[in-house]
Length: 186
Image: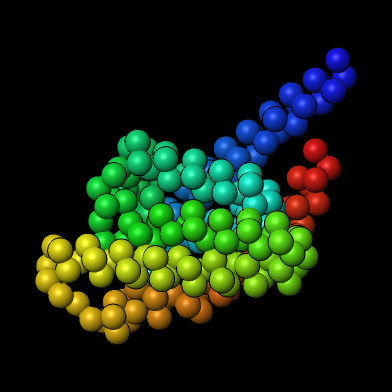
């Protein structure tokens, strides 16, 4: 009987944490930092979710966030939503969040949850997201507006975001370490 209660409590905590981090991703996507090229805190929330919740629950939180947007809840940047956003030019970067989370989960499974593993997995996850999102952008843009070069897309969609994204990784690692202790106590 006690094992059933403990398992139910654990699943309840899992669902709550996943929901909280999906909502945090939405809130962070709405926060736009003005710069030459404005950026949001979406990637920060993705990194933080996997850092705090671990690979499995963090990846599920990312999937829940994207599904919320896909069904029409305005959780994406600029309070946008829907399949049109995911199918649009920058939709590949949003879908790439799942790939980032999967990379982080895989590295966690292979090498553990050490700080250096999390840092390296976040950087590799970010690169995977950039690659997938850039390929997606080029495909959709070419289909809708005509041919575009890789250098142009990188200049629009990747290069301006590298330093802010590395800062977000550092913040996610710092905050994730502290929040992870609290989550483990539950």
